[in-house]
Image (tube, rainbow, N blue to C red):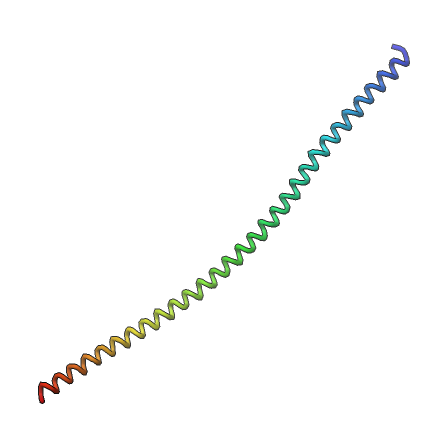
Length: 109
C-alpha cells in the first residue's frame, strides 16, 4: 500500500468514524430531549397532584367542621325534644288530675 492509498483509507475511516459519532450524538440528543419533555410533564403532574391533595385536605377539614356543627345541632335539638316531651308528659298528667278532680266534684255534688 503506497502513501496515497494509506491517506485515502485513513480519510475514509476517519470520515466514517465522524459520521457514526455524529449520528450517535444526534440519536442520544433526540432521546434526551424526549426524556426531558417527559420530566417536565412529570413535574407538572406532580405539582397538579400536590395542589389536588391540598384541596382534598381542605375539603376534609371543612367536612369535619361541618359534621361537628351538625352533631352539635342534633344534640341541642334532641335536648329540646326531651324537654318538650317532659313538659307534654307533665301537662297530660296535670290534665288527668284536673279531670279526676272535676269528676269527683260532679260525683259529690
